[in-house]
Image (cartoon, rainbow, N blue to C red; front, side, top):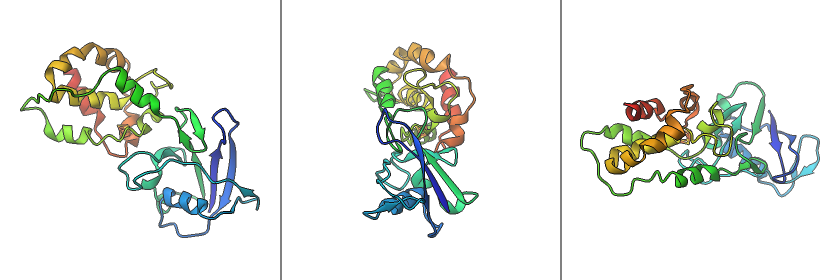
Length: 223
Ligand code: SF4
């Protein structure tokens, strides 16, 4: 199997493709494959040239942290949750998320996600739940990893603070369900940063690794 990885050693450096040969089992995840490629002291590309370790983010390796978000065969995915035996073809293409600045190889700077959430103060604060609110949906929404995959495919997110993304609707819904007073104060923030900007392509739902039903958050808030 040929592994093609889009690499970039410095944040301002040029990106370039580097390929590796892999003939091991396909019963492993892309994250395990990256570990495998990085394992030896001497990492050799498919031209037989010694190269540097591939930079990538990881933490839990079980689909619970969102750190290993990247674009795999042109689909934004979690590397730990994407298995080689489920992919078609004999070439695997891996590139960093395109909507976030590259720090090193597959590592990107997603701090804009936290900065946007901080600037809008979308935190629950005083816990004051409405008894009849949809607890099942609160549970689904709270699974968000802040991985950024939904922003990668969102046609309204062009980088930076252009649009706060599907996760913002989810977090606004949690505030609505658990702190009604604060939710009332946030109404115009939600309208400005989500309600009037989202074009409802719902591509976010196609890639969300937690299968969060974003459309239900939007419908509940709009109602
Ligand atoms: S909504 Fe889904 S895709 Fe978006 S950040 Fe949360 S877990 Fe990731």
